[in-house]
Each structure stands twice: as C-alpha cells, then as structure tokens.
Image 1: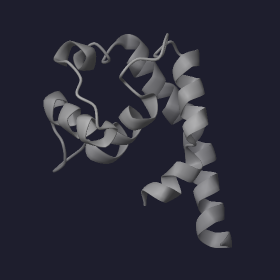
Image 2 (image 1 turned 45 degrees about the vertical axis):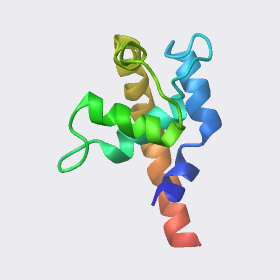
Image 3 (image 1 turned 180 degrees about the vertical axis):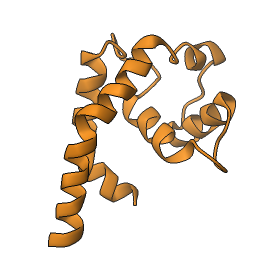
Image 4 (image 1 turned 90 degrees about the vertical axis):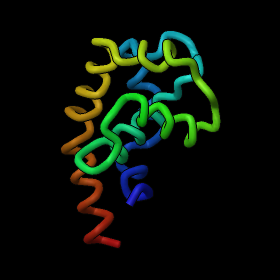
Length: 105
C-alpha cells in the first residue's frame, strides 16, 4: 500500500512543499518525508495514539535518535500548515493518480 501512496506523494514534492511552507528552514534531524509517512500510516484509531509513540516510530524508520525537544518542537502552526497543504494540494491529484494506477495498470 505504501508503494502506491509513494507514487502519489513523491519524496521530492514532499521535501519541496516542506520548504515552501516553512517547516524546513535548514536540514536537521527531522526528515519531512519520514514524518509525513509516520503521520499518514501510523496515526489513527487502534494505531499510534500519542506523540511519544509516533516519536518511537519515527526513530525506528529514520534509524536516528532525536531529543524530545526536537520532536515536540515540530508540532507548530507551520507543521499544521504543511499537513493542510499536503492534503489540499495533493488529495485530488493523488486520488486521480491512484485511479490511473489501479484501473489502467
């Protein structure tokens, strides 16, 4: 399933949008691509329910240990804007692309 979503939300687009929205000012430990997938695929009912559990999941995926302050600092208005932009800009386009992939391949 993740592979299908990766075609709809390419890494380059995720990184560029993160820079444009102000989430990424300079490269640090938090990778916008990894955090996007952690939030997209790990958060919800019967899945990860706390920021601490999401942090552990992020550390597993990125193979990096990050401080609590680096993690919790990410959940800012800019981060919320990024998630909103990801959703608004790509939702319809992503659905169209998924439709093409599912029904034309």
